[in-house]
Amino acid sequence: MKHSRPALALPLAAALLLLASCATPGSVGAGGTAPDAPAGASFGSTLPGAPAGDVIGHGTVIDTGSGAELCLGAVAESYPPQCSGIPVTGWSWDGLDGVESSDDTTWGAYAVQGGYDGKTLTLTQPPILLALYDPMMREDPTDGRAGKATDDDVDAVQTTAPDLLGDAYLGSYPEGGWVWLDVVWDDGTLQQAADDDYGTGVVVARSALTEVG
Image 1 (cartoon, rainbow, N blue to C red):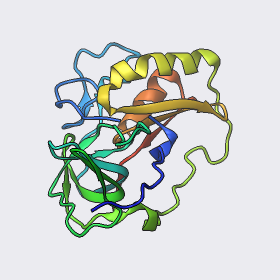
Image 2 (image 1 turned 60 degrees about the vertical axis):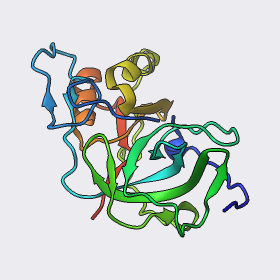
Image 3 (image 1 turned 180 degrees about the vertical axis):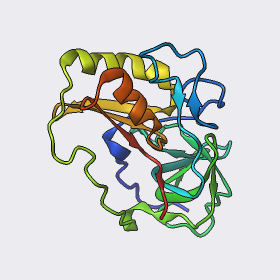
Image 4 (image 1 turned 45 degrees about the vertical axis):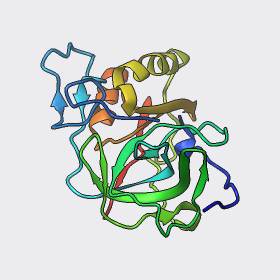
């Protein structure tokens, strides 16, 4: 089934991902700090644990023939679009609105809810067409305060975060004196690690996947 092509937005205004195993930096697993993490190097060594309940994420779901993936970051505006993301199990295109296909690629924009084990999102609820999804407003983590990030802080985060976090890194940009760091999943662990290494008032770590309830 072909429909008119929808506009593909960049979720979270950021850059996406396939998480590595929990033994590698930037992956999600049991959580905790790597035992060999030196002082001042919590960021990238301290890992968030997998969420206990369902999470929800929204973006482009794409299947190039090897299974559906939820892209939480950048989507190349080609036709068909190109992106990589979290594998989604239990996905079916049957009966869904907003589905497009070209050659071997099928895609659409949806809000997706399921259980996340740090590598795969297992669908627990029917996907919602993103155009019809009305997410709850997130609280401003800065409370409207200006941050203290210097140009050196911005450079340090943007230079090191992609390597330290691996595929968990979605993107980053400076705004309002903060370095806004978009990641696949954080339960506060990465935020604390960033505060430890860069100081408070410098980095805001934002999780693309959010807990339900």
